[in-house]
Length: 432
Ligand SMILES: Nc1ncnc2c1ncn2[C@@H]1O[C@H](COP(=O)(O)OP(=O)(O)OP(=O)(O)O)[C@@H](O)[C@H]1O
Image (cartoon, rainbow, N blue to C red; front, top):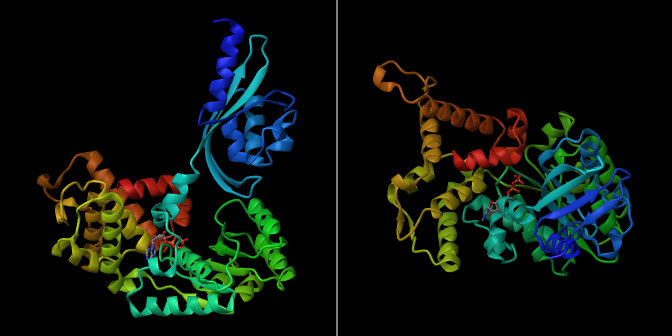
C-alpha cells in the first residue's frame, strides 16, 4: 500500500469512527473535523471548511481547552460538557484533548469527543427508554394528593396557564410538565426542557431562538433556582416581551418559593410570571400509597418490554419499601428497581437477599436513626472489627446518604458540597 493510500484509509476511518475528532493548528485553523463531530455540533460538511475554530466552535470551554493544550502541550482528559448545538439539540460529550507534536516541532491540538447524550437522557428520564410519550396515563398517581396534582395540571393544560411546580428532587415534576404538554388541546410544536443546572448562556440563547419563532412551544425551565439572579432577570424580560404569544411556560423549583426569594435564590419577578398556578408535588414518604402501584407498573413494563418473569416483591421486601423514607423519591425507587432487575433471571418474586447491599444499609441507618442510635459506627469487642475497606465503605455510604438527606435529596447540591461531580455522585449512589 502506498503512503497516499494509507492517508486515504486514515481519512476514511476518521470519517466513520463514532468519536468526534477536531484538530486545530497554532493559528486556530481547523485541520480536521470528522463526520461525528459535525453531527454533534449540528453542522453540514461545507460549514466547517476553511473556518477558524473560534468561529465554528462557539463553546467557550471547548475553545479554551484546545488553546490550553496548544499553549501547555499537556493533555487534558475526560472533560464533560453539555451544550445546545447549531440545530438547537442538547448534546453531552466527554472529551480528551491531546497535543500532537510534528517532527518539525509544531503543535496540533486534537479533541476526541464521545457522545454521551443518550446515556445522560436515560439517566435523568429513565421512563423515556420505553419510547412512549410521557402523558398523564404513564404517571403513577394512586394517592389522593397525587390525583389532585394531576387534576390541577389538567386545568393548566386546558387554560394554557403558566405553572410553577414545587417539589423535592425525583418527585416527578418533569413528567408532570411533559404531561401538560401532551394534554394541550391545541398541540404545541415541541416540548423544550431548559435545564437550569447547566450553562446559562446556551440556555438563554435557546429561549431566544424559539420564543420569537412562528410556532408555539412548551418551555419547561427545570429548577430555576439554580440560575443566577442575572439570568433569571434576563429570562423574565424575554418572557415578558413575548407575553402575547401562545407559548406555554412551566417552571419547577425544589423547595418553598418564599424561602428561595428570601435567600436571594429566586427572582420575585420570575416567580410572579409563573405563579398563576402553583402545584405542590408531595414527597413519596407523604404518599406511600403510590409506592406499590409504581413497583407494579415498573415490573409490568419490564415484563412487556424485556420478557422477564418477575411478578413483584416478597412480603418482607414490600414491608421494607413501605417503611423506608425514599429521600430521592420515585427516582430513587426507580434506580433501585433497575439495579434489582439487572440481576433477575428466572425469579418471580424479589426476596430480601436480592436487594443491593447499599439499600439494606440505607434502611438500617434509617432504623438506627429512628431508634435514636447515633453511635452506629461504634465497636467494643474484637469480633466487631471488620476489614478496613469494608468499614470505610460503610462510613462513606453513611456520609453520602446523610448529605443527600440534608440536601432534601438534591443530587447536584449534595455533589457540590461533597466536592464531587454530579455524575460521580450518581455513580456512587448506584454502586453503594
Ligand atoms: N409519579 C411518577 N410515575 C412514574 N414515574 C415517576 C413518577 N415520578 C417520578 N418518576 C420517575 O422518576 C424519574 C424522575 O422524575 P422527574 O425527573 O420528573 O423528577 P423531578 O421532580 O423533576 O426531579 P428534579 O427536581 O431532580 O428535576 C422520571 O423520569 C420517572 O422515571
